[in-house]
Image (cartoon, rainbow, N blue to C red; front, side):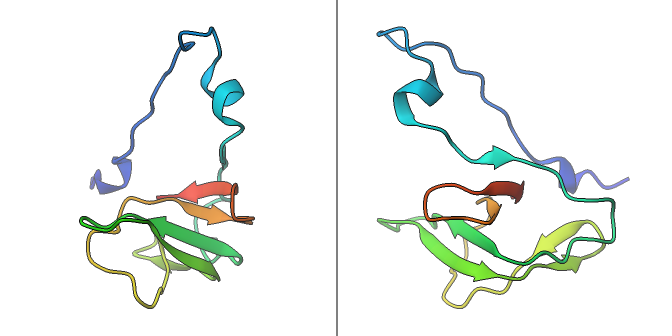
Length: 104
């Protein structure tokens, strides 16, 4: 069984020196969500954000459509995306600040 779709991490944080938890100090982040059962990886209104090595700011692929790749992954076509951008979030309904994380 391939495990390449299990490459993710979670981070647990605690209060800062003022006793604030991360969300209270920085504002609400993206909402982690799930997609329907397999076979439904074609999603609309998805943005992709990536930070290639050597860049001074992230690259954003604005709202587009994903398609299924190998039946297990999301694929998105973004003009101008450079190598090294992988690992960024796929954000559905991204409003410029927040969206629903449906993949990485």
